[in-house]
Amino acid sequence: MLDNLITFQKYSNIDFNFNDNLRIKDSLMFIKCSNFNININCKINKITIKNCSNFNLTYFDTISGIDIDKSKEITIRRIYKENTDLNLNYINCFMSKVKFCFDNLVELLGVKFISENSEIVFEN
Image (cartoon, rainbow, N blue to C red; front, side, top):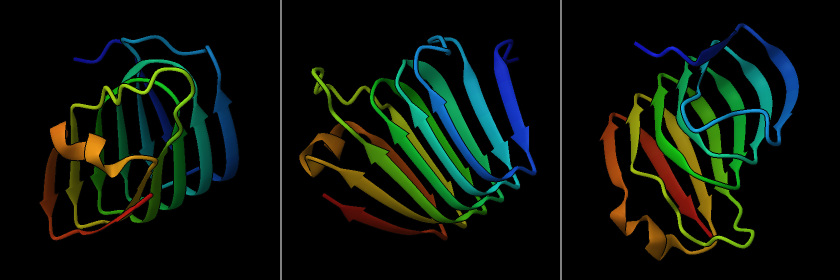
């Protein structure tokens, strides 16, 4: 199904910085990770966050979709450099507590949000 899937399972207290180490076809999956900080500075396909806590994702470029499942204290932050196009198609939250931080919340109007039993906060 996903040939370029990179999975991180049961990691704690980690800081990752993906500068140009990923490609547009790559997807990342985080399962049961806690105290996790990740920066992504390149285009990627999809991010899945399952059963994680205290998880901070900062991205600077295109992510096609984000799935968050049964996770708490998740922060998703978009930092704009030169390209102000959001290039995010969907966000799917299931039984999670998520905070989205974007410079311009109006740009989220084109993003498809699916929320099932989740607490979502938007901040700019």
